Length: 214
Image (cartoon, rainbow, N blue to C red; front, side, top):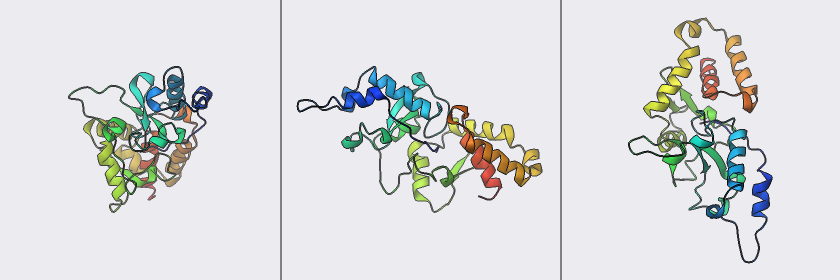
């Protein structure tokens, strides 16, 4: 998973919600453009155009607005900006494996969820050189459940992660890189502005941290 730092919701979205009166209350199904488009755009920008779950590249045409706590069961959070993210896959096609927000659907279990807002969410997962994702702690049931429910272990994502990791962490680099080299790499990625982050950068940082024993 990828950590998300929330910013400020767009003014048009706030203004639209503030038009509530005794005869009408805003709901997500009644959210239309331009407010919905503005909301989607700001979510993409604050995530660096990267999916909140897998970290792959996304844009408006390839993503959707994701309710972390599903609106069907958390109606009071359906328009809460802290509950809204941009997730990959805008359209689902028969035969294509679902993952991330569309795969999660309406699932939510308070004791098993890991939010993209959690400071430690990225540290609860580890990655192998072949792209596999695992809980960092084998006893971490929520991490295992999030991998399952988001289908973060499907072949497409595993192959994307493998290719990203191996571009940098080949056997020669792993055996020759010093702890200072690895720490510097982690520092650069972790300190990068959101707009400068690249797809799966959080996985590169995490893999380097693992080599450092973190």
